[in-house]
Length: 415
Ligand code: COA
Image (tube, rainbow, N blue to C red; front, side, top):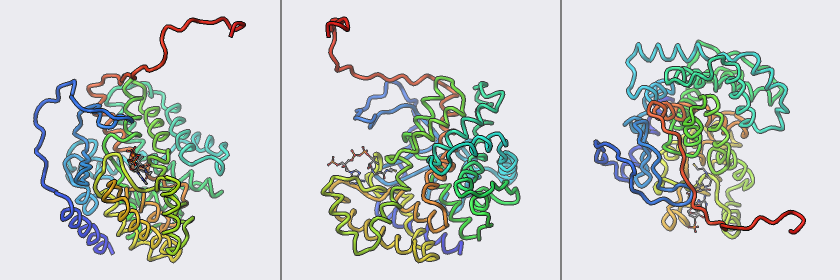
């Protein structure tokens, strides 16, 4: 089965190379000199906030690279543990480095009981799991007596610990929402496998474990997106890594960012059947509603992650007639959106369009999709924050003031 997954990724990569130019870009070797000249649009479109070696998104080509490695290659060959090492250290680990790093992640998986006590006190079925996750990470920060040590060494230690603990927290929240007892992490399982085990109580088969691993790899980093920037902005005041990551979680929750994956599934359920896609799409266009899971600030070509996730969703939904029906709806919706908006507005599926179907086929509750995105994104958030921290300057942009000036203050009884 893992040969089947490998083949799907190779085909997706081939398609991407055929349809978009994958010629390597001329390497930038100079020194970045500030101020960098660029045009800035609303929402900081086009603004350059820093230089980085962590990762690169080429939106025109549909190209995603972590530390110089193409996401198609990483999805085919790597693991989440190895990709995380790569993002932090800037190179692929050798065998013993990977072993040591994986062991370190395993030994950091446990979460203090006090965090669970707080989670149990939340109205867990009424609160969004991203809000619960945000609270849990904040509590972790309160329990660390050295949280205010903001040296790069300490912040890196916290980052690695958070990569490991996020999976435990997300699984605990999923189980508490279902009224089930929390399962302790199992150190004989890899990160993705253990996540699925802790969430469902069942050891996943090799296909599910590998698919989850690929999901985590493909979500690990993605340029200067809103949640990454939020994490970096908070950290740039030399606030601690826990609080910075809390900001990342809060930002990722929004439906214009990570929250889109769950919205897609609600839309697919609302459409319900392939025969309803056309009328649903027409209504969405008439009401100028944005179609969840489509469009991107940076990609004006097909999102390479969606290229991989589409075929994986097709493969994995085969296991479950209910999600298979939703896959057919999604596939039809993609055809319609691409034919009407693809050429005109360069609107294509993004990573969130097919990811929910994959999680759903794994038996994961819709509200847990964004928390899984979050646990996968911790390496990207923290690797970029650590890189910036090493040569920190507080973020402090300005706004153009367009309000009135020189108004006379009128006492309250004369207004
Ligand atoms: N459905 C329909 N039209 C869309 C669209 C979508 N999902 N996304 C963008 N467009 C249209 C806009 O209406 C706009 O049209 P106009 O030029 O006629 O005004 C044009 O494409 C440019 O979009 P804009 O809203 O300026 O893009 P943005 O960079 O501000 O926003 C997103 C990017 C991702 C927030 C936006 O595409 C979106 O809301 N997508 C749905 C939510 C989603 O999937 N988010 C996850 C992103 S990974």
